[in-house]
Image 1 (tube, rainbow, N blue to C red):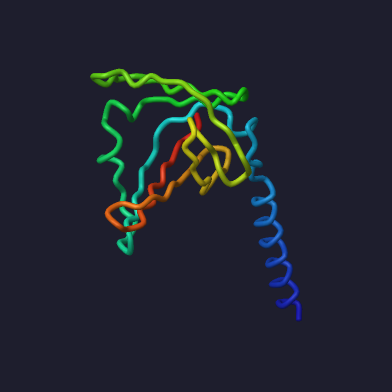
Image 2: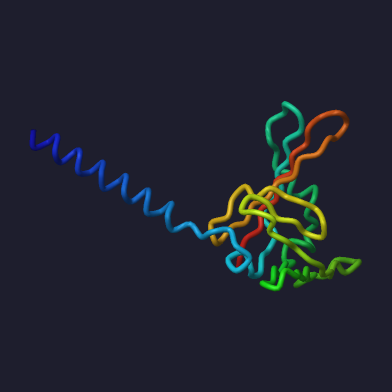
Length: 142
C-alpha cells in the first residue's frame, strides 16, 4: 500500500509539473510576439511525401544571419544583417494578428504552429503541381 501511495504521489507531481509547464507558455499576443528573430529551418511537405528539410534550398548562406523585428505597433523590419547578400534584402511593412492561431505579414496569412516565447513556427499551405504543399518556417527569437 505504501508503494502505491508513493507511486500515486509521483504521478501527481509529474502531472502537475506538466500542467505548470503548459500554463507558462506565453499567450500569442502582439506584445509577446514583438521582438527580433533570426531564420531557423524551412520544412516542406509535398503531397503524401514525408516532410523534408529544405532550409539550404530556401535560405542562402548570406540570409542565415538576417533579422526580422516584429514591432508592437504592427510594423516589421527585415534587415540583411551580417553577411550582405548581393542584392540587399532590407524591407519593412506591416503585420497583424487576426487571432491566436494566425499571423499576417504584408497580406500573407500564416498559421502559427508553435510559439513558446523563443521559437515562432509558422506554416502556409498552397497547391503546387496539383498537390498540397505546406511550407513551415521557424524563426528564433533573440
